[in-house]
Image 1 (tube, rainbow, N blue to C red):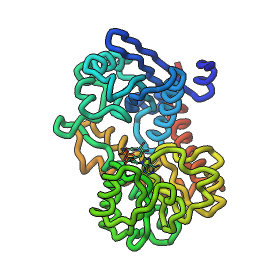
Image 2: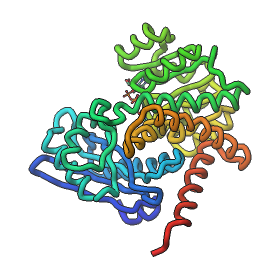
Image 3: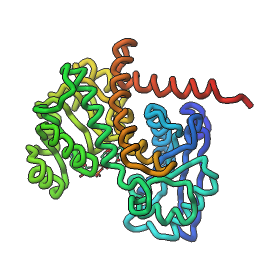
Image 4: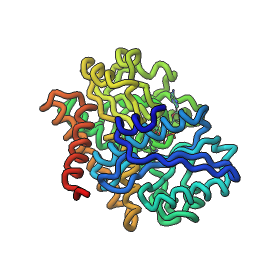
Length: 353
Ligand code: NAD
């Protein structure tokens, strides 16, 4: 990879590589943009097939964090760390502590949190070596599991979308079609049921699937059938890349609003959704509840105050819809425009060296 060319093209400020063979640590920390504040982003531990794959992931994910934080109105930048290794096999206290020292050496320019392959309990070990971390368990004074806040933000965005698409923000009697029934989706389902919505769910894991049926009276469909279900809102809450040229023509919903990251396989899918008359809630605009909640750990964490801030995702979504209409943009482009406008304004205010 032509690393410096890629960094210049994508706007990355720094990429740091850390190695400690004595504990098996191989890690990349990418800092995308610190215009708005220190770069916040979780630590992903994954058995990447190649080092290049790990680097690409760190670069891509750190940039997405800059946009997510900017649009959420946080005074934080975007970063991401990836540790090469299998969390089930390779994660040890010694490795996590060596990783904590790596984070600490960046002096607060990067703040870590948990992500795929790392847990709030791992953060308690990392915390022995650095204070630059967020997302400790609730019982240790932290903000704990981010899924409830993420789900709450997605629900707020659904209200804003319903208001635009149906002229009524209420979700009572609406059918929400959910792909994946994990931590975020199950929290979302509880709130949707409380509001009187009907649920259709596809889930590959039998335990989660049974829970959806028994606890939430969801109609269960096979994983591949989920795109064909007639409903009001399609909520991708499993994987990225699920909205593409073969799935979009199958959708039978007026709105797409879910928590999964990177839902569009490619940029053109935003145009495909618009052409199909489907209102797309940009993923990073509406799944920011988790980092908004996390950011409140920077002061004393008060759940009510944090959730009140998460609720503002409703207004962000309404603003994205308004910009998309006024500027004749897709909602995905409107969200990028809004995030970039905030970054440009902050850059213009920054003192020049
Ligand atoms: P999770 O792992 O708890 O849930 C994902 C679920 O999707 C699992 O139960 C899995 O079995 C299921 N699944 C996987 N492939 C599937 C398929 N093809 N069809 C049906 N089900 C499938 O994860 P989560 O924390 O609930 O996060 C869900 C999504 O939201 C992820 O994309 C995640 O990156 C994103 N997200 C989560 C948060 C958060 O706070 N947890 C924040 C922002 C974004």
